[in-house]
Length: 312
Image (cartoon, rainbow, N blue to C red; front, side, top):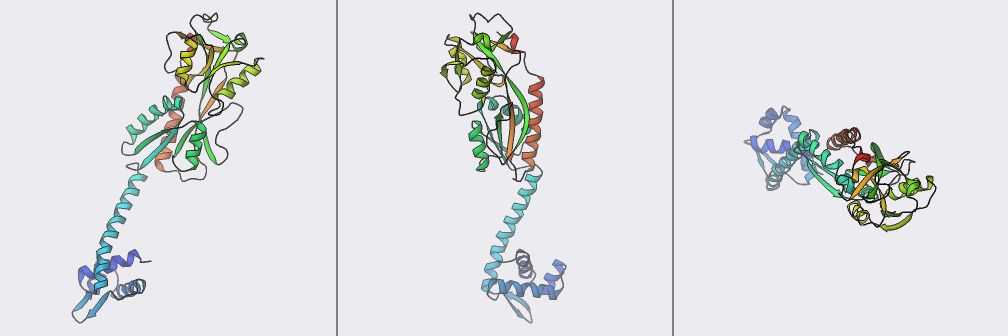
């Protein structure tokens, strides 16, 4: 392996034409320059410099190595500049993964804040349900993943992830406008025990298990009329009279005019929104900056949550 510091000495010898002139330029002694060139010749396995009474001359191998040295040192300078830019958030990239309702609410606000503060960092977003987001994090495909866990501590992704709490995301009942309970501001789940329910798939995120546990606490097993992972579609099924549903706050950015959203009494089931990174991974300045912003955004959403019991 060729030593970069010795390549710099060789370049100075070539440019100055003598060991003494190279020594002056490098603030070395002439003996130190000679030793560096001798060591580089041993590393290269060939003679690089020919000495004479009129100075030094590069051999053919020496000339070839100096040509490559110029390229190597230029690339190293570029690398150092890029690392300085990344460290100073003047460059680099940041890759995020988020489930759909987070990607429609938390992430746009976080990205807008990040770009305002650090416009030179390249950002990308991969849509991924929590289990897939955790997998992408483990595979090194993303730097931060937005995840969901349950109030009783059921987490997605298994061990080895460093999770940070962002906010609680309470759930609300979605009813057709003509429903017998539509005029109430708060609805008990047990009053809907005989209804057909629109439910998300149980394998992609904890929403379904949170809902099912809430129903068990209310003393009934829900009758599932239809399953969909798209909360906008679920609102459509509710509006069509196919049943009722429980929908988290983050999925209620848009509410149809032909449904009503009501708070759940006495206490709404809720999911916990987290961000996650690899537990033992290097945390770059851009990752640290985004993690701080996500906490800010989580606090904003918690403080500004709409009183959905009055919607509809």
